[in-house]
Amino acid sequence: MTLLGKSFTVVIFLLSLTFMVLSLAVNASHRNWRDVVLGPAGYKEQIEAISRQNEQLEDAQQRAQSSLAREQVARRTALAALQTQLDQLEGELQLRISSVQKLEGELSNLAQLDKIRATELQTLTDTNQKLRDQVRKEQENRDTLFGELLVLQDNLNTQRGIRLEFEQRNASLQKEVTRFREVADHMGIDPKLPLDGTPPDRNGTVLVIDRPKSLVEVSIGSDDGLRGGHELEVTRDNRYVGRLKVLKAEPNRSVAEIMKDYSQGFILEGDRVDTSIK
Image 1 (cartoon, rainbow, N blue to C red):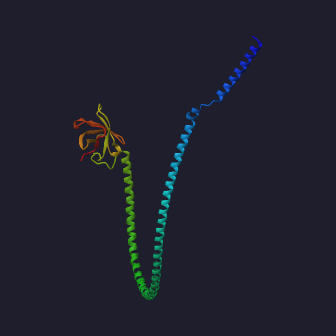
Image 2 (image 1 turned 30 degrees about the horizontal axis):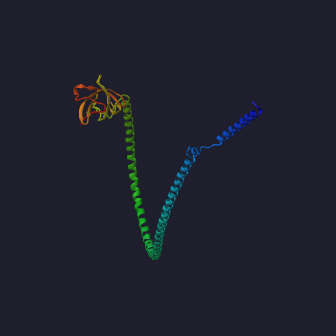
Image 3 (image 1 turned 90 degrees about the horizontal axis):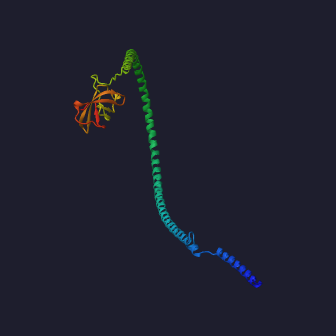
């Protein structure tokens, strides 16, 4: 190859290298304006966001104007109410002035009445002197009554002695009652229970049923006066169902046996139980 051909070859290589660098530079600085406008966070989205914000601001402005208008109307109404109240207060002031004038007239009348009362007081003073004379006579009568009081005092002392004797007997009886109560509590006897052994009038409900063993647990127990051997009547909606016999009584519940001879239906949980049916 000649020197000229080699020179052209080098020049072409250098120009190619230069164009390649320029093309890379242009490609690096190139922007896709469609993506800039329509892409995420692009100009179109920003414009729409600004438009929405502008609409919100206009809506807020309208609400603020409406609120301001309502507040102005409310203040005008309040001002009118205050003016009405002022007129009422002025009317009341006039009434109070009239009342004061009336009271001044009444005060003048009371001054005249005071003079009359002074005259009456003098009359009462004279009457008081007469009453004093009567008091002296009453004192003499009191002395007589005092002698009678001494006699009554002696009778009172006698009655106090009798009362003291009764109080001592009452204390003795109270001790005996307390002792009887202790014995009854110790023996588990409730003085309120009937003397014939029947349970008091109580009612409850059926809690648990053990049909294989014909046993029932009810919600009333020894605290309600139940004892072993007592019988309970079972009803449902005012209809007789059967009878139970208490086997074991605890303070707040009892275990009873179903008396099959009196059964008129199946006993269910929640049925009512009574110590007696009236």
